[in-house]
Length: 172
Image 1: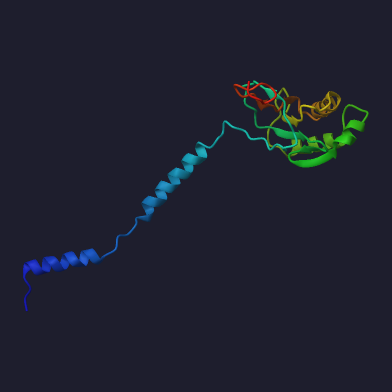
Image 2: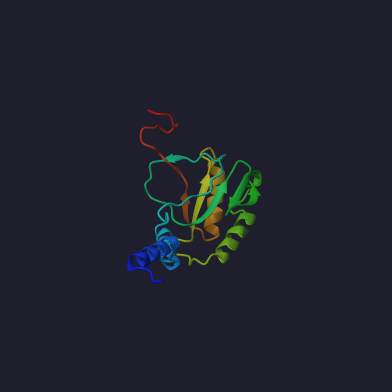
């Protein structure tokens, strides 16, 4: 039996309704690729996070200059850490009578040899994270060792002073 044109049209319409939609994966992959590149380029390149031990209370400053990418030397209550690795005890450094501590210098020399950065005229950059109560004599020995190892561009890490608070961290 021959079907009418209207019946054929209804049948075609019902067949189309039963088909499931398909995702175009090529377009999705393009979108995600662009998103990944965007996030990589716009990652927080203007912010440098220094891994800081909670036991270290950095001095407060109103400095606006952002730190450069540099080797981090942290001085905790017990240890001196270079790149997050314990090198020697603070008590050993305090008891050392000279200016340049050999264990710390050896580690800094190793880090300099491992680094792909070329030393500038000012020397290699290093950032020292030390408690604000650290004795000056100990800081002086650490800085002298850094300079002797070629790290003459020394930066001291500080906490940025927030507006509306005094140096004690209490609201004014």
